[in-house]
Image 1 (tube, rainbow, N blue to C red):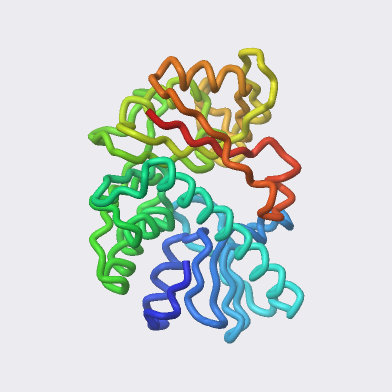
Image 2: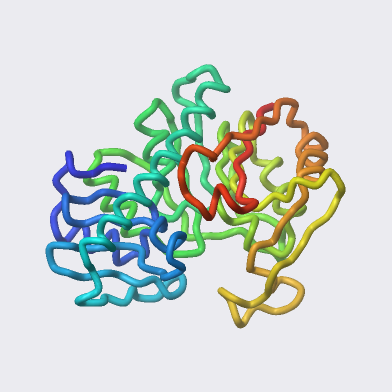
Length: 285
C-alpha cells in the first residue's frame, strides 16, 4: 500500500514501523516496509530507511525492532523494494479475486484473523467495505490509530489472537469476508482452526497457507518451537504446518463452501512462493 499521497510524518512512520509492521507499505521514497526481502534472503529485515541508512530487524511479536546502521547498500535497497512490490502485487490480486467472486459488493464486512498492520483491511476499506476488523498476536493498537488518522478511516483492531487451547478468537463475530494469511502454517491444530474460520465466514474465506498437492488426508509438522520456544506440547508445532490438498478440500466442503478456487501466485515472481507449497485458496458459500 502506497502511503506517500498522505505524506506521513517521520513520527507516524516510526510509530508504524516500531509496532512491528512487516506488510508491504511505502511510506516515502526512502522508507519502505515488508517481509519480501526476508523471504528472499532469510534475514528478518522488515523495513529500510535509506535516507538515514537504517534497516530494522524483527525478532519476535511485541518486542522492539533492532535498528541496524550501515546495512543498506544500493543492491539491498533494490532487492528490498523489488520483492515487496511483488508481494503487493500478489496481495492485491487476492483482493481482486475476492471482490470479483462476490460481484463487487458494497458495505460488506471483513475480518482478518492475523492482520498485522491491516494491509488487507485498509485495501478492502478503500474498495467499498463497511466494518473492517483485525486481530493479531501483536498489540498493534497504536499502528491502527496512526493509519486511521492518516487515511481518515475507521478500521478496528483487537489485540487478541486465535487460541489453540480453545480453538477460537474470543468474541470474534461472523463476517462476510474472512482472511487468514500465513497463520495456519504456524498452528498445531489446523483442522480446528479451519473449523473456526468456517464458523465466522458468511460468504468468502481467503486462505494463504502451506498445502501439499496430495489427494490423501494428512497433516505434516515440519518443526516445533522455532518462533515460540516456550510453547508446550501439543501446541508447539509452529514451523510450516502443512495440510494436504485432499484434506483441505474435504474440510472446506464439509464446512459448507460450495465454490473453491485456487488463486495462482505463479506470476508474482517470489521464489519462496512459486517453489514451495505456499498456496492461496478462495472458498465461497
